[in-house]
Amino acid sequence: MPRLNAQNPMVLDTRELNRRPGTMQELTRRVEAPETIGTDVIAIPAGDPLDLEIRLESVVEGILVSGSVRATATGACVRCLEPATYPVDASFQELFAYADRAAHHHEVGADANGADEDVVRVLEGDLIDLEPVIRDAVVPSLPFQPVCRDDCPGLCSECGALLAEDPDHHHDTIDPRWAALTGVFTEQPGTTPEMNPEKRT
Image 1 (cartoon, rainbow, N blue to C red):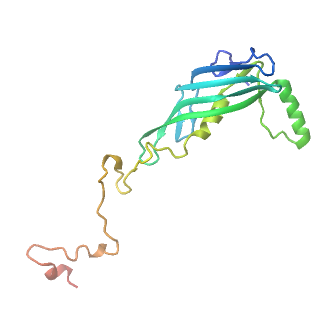
Image 2 (cartoon, rainbow, N blue to C red):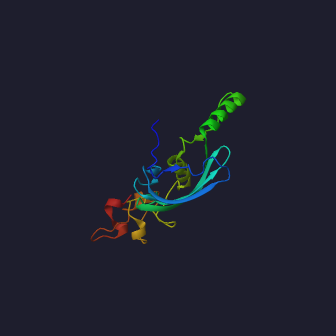
């Protein structure tokens, strides 16, 4: 596993807290999304800004990280396939355990349950990798079926026309039970419907 780079804006240095329970630090950062964050339908593109409000609290077990992330996700409207945007405002709270505490937790958990069922995030020295926390907060907050607007009428089911651009768009439809009779009463030049020899039964 590669070591964390303290110069990475998504990596937090906790040395100022120095294992003193009750000590707190607050940070405000604007960083770029290192990778696309989201789903195949809608996501925050890589390189787009993330506005972070972060609070670090020293506790006995490690560092409690809480805060919020704000950004804009983009995708395609599921009704009309036009571009759709979604304002992201997700909160997070995660405990990063000191390495020695995490090892103890693993041993106790395995002894009690036969397996360590809990996923414990661990500090790497004094550093915290915030990226997986941000991803875990953002993805569940995204809409499963994004729309460009709440009242998007979508596309015409017959021809695919964008209904938002033509609210009066429609197709004349004929009940299929009567479709076979549509030509029976068609007038031919010089005849009346009753005298059309081709349609007479």
